Image: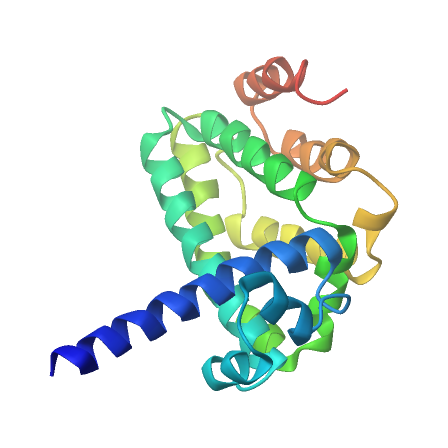
Amino acid sequence: MQDSKNISAYRQSLKDRILEVAMKAFASHGIKAVKMDDIAQMIGISKRTLYEVYANKELLVYEGIKKHKEIHDLQMKQMSKESVNVMDLILKIYRKQVEQYRQTCPEFFSDISRYPKALKYLRENEANDMRQFIEFLKRGVSEGYFRADLNVNMVALMFSAIATYINYHQLYKEYTLEQIYANFVLVSLRGFCTALGTATLDNMFAEEIK
């Protein structure tokens, strides 16, 4: 029984290690550029062992994206809880995304479309992401930073359309995240901010985006 537990613990540890190494490599070089052979060599295991844990690259990418999304959602909830107001939350999210973007090559984002299982998972979570964004908008209204007459459902759809456009045209390959934020996100945010919200937003990002 003890041997069985040790084997199970080792296998789980190996699975986690493979996922960690693979996702870092994918982020640095793009998913397509990193082969299963490369991952096995980085960890120091045989290709056979790798395939015993992850039957194929599709499954590895899916598990990596799923874990990343789960961690991301937990971080968003924690940041929302710790933020003194919705504007403070916007700044925290921006800084987090800039940090992540700088550690991830543009090819990583475009390569995801090559893996249907991972792409399906992300699309299945869109409804939940939309609900969370609507709650964010309602919070901004209640705190006086967003206009009281805001149609939160329509605004959520607008931001979804903006994100789709950015991803479809792969603008992250042509522009920095700072440029995308300044010309897409912040311009749109200012459109439904109150005078307090606009002043706060402008002051916050005066030194953040140059």
